[in-house]
Length: 102
Image 1 (cartoon, rainbow, N blue to C red):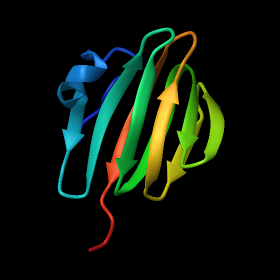
Image 2 (tube, rainbow, N blue to C red):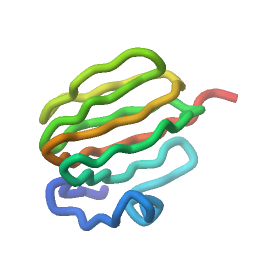
Image 3 (cartoon, rainbow, N blue to C red):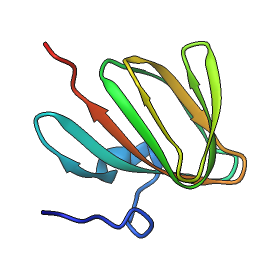
Image 4 (spheres, rainbow, N blue to C red):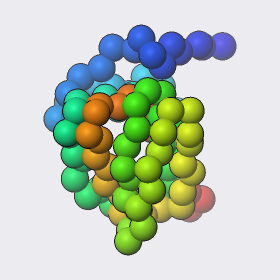
């Protein structure tokens, strides 16, 4: 059993996001996402199911042509889609990519 402290996990900048993966197996990959105030994450086509859980702050998340504001302790779970996000005040999220059935 592993326990992860989502508030205190160390993280790298978005450009080095691969280093923010803190757990991965054959079914899913989990990372911490830290966004600085005013930061935007460009469009990213996700070919897997995803889950975004907001640990701290809030983000404007876009999925295809829909937008939603996610706040602390809220989670979005979605089928594969085109995603982007931005924050005005900064945010920390946990992102989970879940493989689809082949």
